Image (cartoon, rainbow, N blue to C red):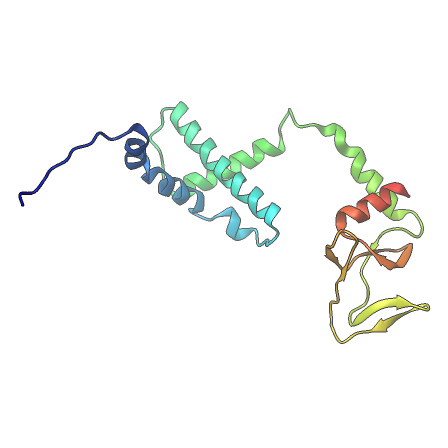
Length: 177
């Protein structure tokens, strides 16, 4: 047989994919250069990691938008990105639209912890539980207990050394006091 040539028409999504697929790599390059927020913020807790990723993507988008709106030729130099980050941080800290009325929560939290007999505590190392007025020894240095919500924790409230709380449950306990 003779070779058969078939033609087909690109659909729009395939056209866009092949036309703009390099944009993701370019965006990631801008996000990671000169230094990436995700790698400098050494956290393993996934909500913080997701927040760091979204913050870094927003930062790059803001830089690209400002470059586009000011009709500047994009500068890929590391110092330009660092200068932009410094300016962005200053603007975020001195934001006139920021709600400054939320100052009561930390004061309430400090007051709660300063109330006699309440506050987050951690047991001594190499202990398992508090029984008959003393901590029982353990072979594990940092023994964790499971709370009602199945979360492993090492935190108890000063008011009761026998009950361990995860962070949200401890906050609920302190708000009930």
